[in-house]
Length: 116
Image 1 (cartoon, rainbow, N blue to C red):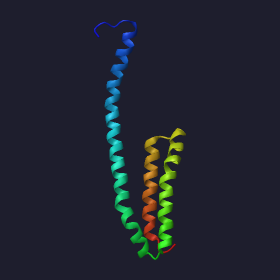
Image 2: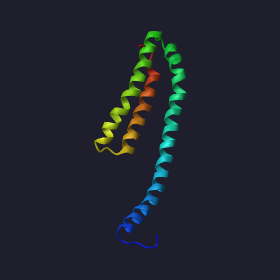
Image 3: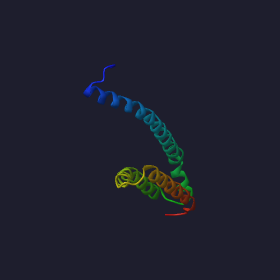
């Protein structure tokens, strides 16, 4: 593409922009991979022991089932709410930081549970 006539220059310019976007894309993907790894790592570390923890805190099997079902309902509902908030022009990083902070606070609040 040594010749840059009319339409060719737009194609070359778009190709050049694509190179800078791909470097940014790789950086964004790296961050998303880390976020997913940490998110699912926490879920994988907590979920297997949650029912045992709640049983030790005095909850019955039925109540533990309700807590687990509520958590599953949250997994289904949360992406919809987060998407709506993100589409309302809220900064993505701020939104995700707030969601993870709220999750941490709520997970720490479970330590105070001694009944249903």
